[in-house]
Length: 497
Ligand code: NAD
Image (cartoon, rainbow, N blue to C red; front, side, top):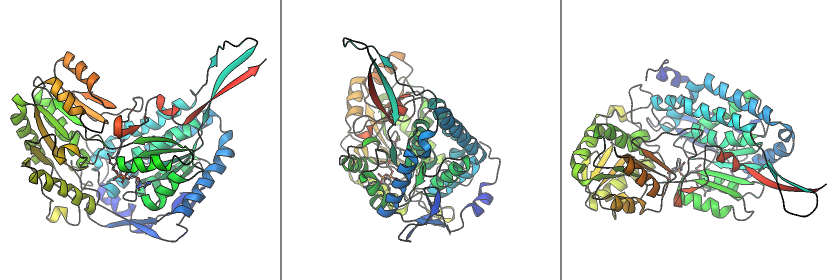
């Protein structure tokens, strides 16, 4: 895509190492402790800004602000007023889209060409939720009780929502939480990841500019242990929506049991990508490669177990490796960059650890496998797109979520076999199938246990289509009309007339 502005020039002035306060009850505040966390550019290691190191006391203030707003002014907003607000926020996103994308590129490394390309989807989400705001309704139910009794249901907002998000797509993750909350009349305390807290703070600014009442959206920055855990435990929070790793999701589900919070979880994955022998290989190669290499593999839906029909396996893997070698890796501010850095040196070390284990367990390293160094990579955390062949199901790299640019390729012989192997994982987030046979497509989409199955494509997401996981990839859905139900309670009303 052609970029209509100079990302590098704009980046110079967006973050200059200053302190960026968090947003509680309509005020921009430091942490009560006065402590801060640094946010650095993963492509260069440069300090972008510091943010408050929020903790339990700040979470307390934010939950109180959210409760006051929920019971006060916000409860008086009619659906069409909430709709108008969401539409205004969408317009502000349009006007500030370049800055929001630049912020994500700087803070978490995603190439600017990729963040900009999400425009329709992200702003579409806001407009989709705006549309839903005026469509919330209960129903009149005919009962069988003798006498004149009317029964109907009301849909009511669940209350104060605690939203906890990861670092790999801050704009979309924030909107998938805040959008439905505003549409349904809930209030939100959002905790961004400590690895990428800056864009959610820009989003809060746009919320304020749009006229969202004080306390309806609050952002508490901080670590998972210091700010996330108190939020998930807080008795004043009615619901937690969480996106992140399965281990943290389990901790959050446990924390929610004290006051039986509603909990929805979008968790990790180890998604299968299945290339059948009748697949259109020219089409499948780039899609299978980018199903992992996009965002340097830091995508929950990464199709990281690449099952390829044995007859075409070797050729297919060679072509994926050739594709990987041609990818332009570097700072996401460069217009041409296709693959950016890994979020942190710690995470890059974790990915390197998996590559090492893959080698030791006997997988065949076809391409990549090294940390990149040199003038283009100085100060950053870059790992070459990596492909392992001759992987077997029991190997660590075929079982665990790596969250880095690593493909594990596994040959298969029959459809029954590949279905069983694809499903032999605790995860169930997504899957891809490449075939030119419509019967095979139906067979596989029915039998694969995953919240999303793409055929002859990958990655597509749309506000109107539900997204979420099965098994240990979580529960609940984001997007689609059923999503709003997760922010609503159903009340049955009986009236003796
Ligand atoms: P993570 O679980 O480490 O952190 C996610 C968020 O939870 C962060 O804000 C973190 O501060 C917070 N947190 C950590 N410990 C906590 C605790 N004990 N209590 C409350 N909050 C806590 O995940 P990550 O490393 O930021 O992100 C990568 C993971 O997210 C991967 O597993 C990936 O698959 C998953 N993910 C899933 C989806 C999806 O939609 N299914 C989307 C993106 C990422």
